[in-house]
Amino acid sequence: MTVLVTGGAGYIGSHMVYALRDTGERVVVVDNLTTGFSWAVANGAPLVIAESGDQPKLAAVIAEHGIDTVIHFAASIVVPDSVLDPLGYYRNNTVNSRALIETAVSSGVRYFIFSSTAAVYGNPEHVPVGEDDPAVPMSPYGWSKLMTEIMLRDAGAAHGLRYAILRYFNVAGADPLGRSGQSTKGATHLIKVAVETALGLRPKLDVFGTDYPTPDGTCIRDYIHVWDLARAHCDALAYLRGGGQSVTLNCGYGRGFSVLEVIETVKRVAGRDFPVQLGARRAGDPAQIVACAERARTILGWRPQFDDLATIVHHALTWERRLQASGEGAVQSMDSA
Image 1 (cartoon, rainbow, N blue to C red):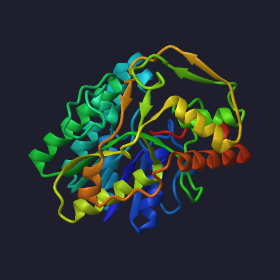
Image 2 (cartoon, rainbow, N blue to C red; image 1 turned 90 degrees about the vertical axis):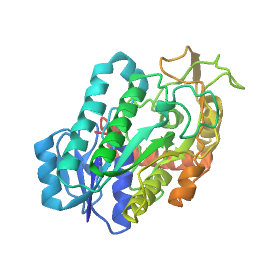
Image 3 (cartoon, one colour; image 1 turned 180 degrees about the vertical axis):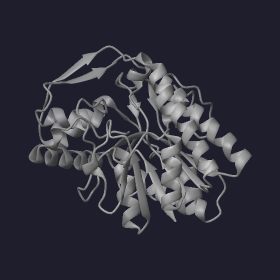
Image 4 (cartoon, rainbow, N blue to C red; image 1 turned 120 degrees about the horizontal axis):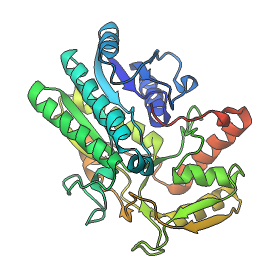
């Protein structure tokens, strides 16, 4: 049995490949390297440079390597960008995913794990938000992911493809062993941006919106360590292979931190102050979103190891210093293909 990881040269995907290789799995990576890096792929995992929606190419890869599972990360992921370029996001996230699901079905793939997002909930009425709460996205990014969820569910019902849909909350941090991390130049992720600012790579940190209905007026998010997220995928794979039925699960810790709280944590962990500029809201940002993730713990037996904001920041900071020292920080991006 071999696992195909799309976007496996990107931020979360590269951690997934390491997690799979650590457990002895055979892994093949498909990435178009538009935003991923070949150097981010773990040794021993073949890299095929291709679009995830290239059906002839993907069918050949699946046949050649005996793929039984697809873990699909490849996507465009920046919420404000999706507002400016909705059709591009629907093409890359939804249309390509539809092609990949069809290829998986026609090629006899048994299991499919999909990288979804808390953005499908929009601005939820209840916090923490559970998997059965309404999905009403606020951005084309969120809609593009929700559309893929729907297609996957329908394909599963029609063709017997068993799947796990994992809805991520805010992913941050880096591999505790220092093998991978978020290497995006011009990133929009708060912890990444704050760490770069603390190290003098940015002149200031911009805060988008201080008038939200939250205790300090800034957005509240549930931050999950990237390695805990990768382990959740490994648990989902074991669950499906063990006969588990298709499932949709939140991946978060159930605890939220405001933008200002995150900034203060980065300053404390880094031991450095840095300029912060308060500004207007960005389009597509909900005020508060925190996961109810008990279902993942119950169904998958998932047990997070790094449920601590300071630890997440420490690992992100360590990785950023490594990028500075190696010069790899000048590479364009490492988010997802």
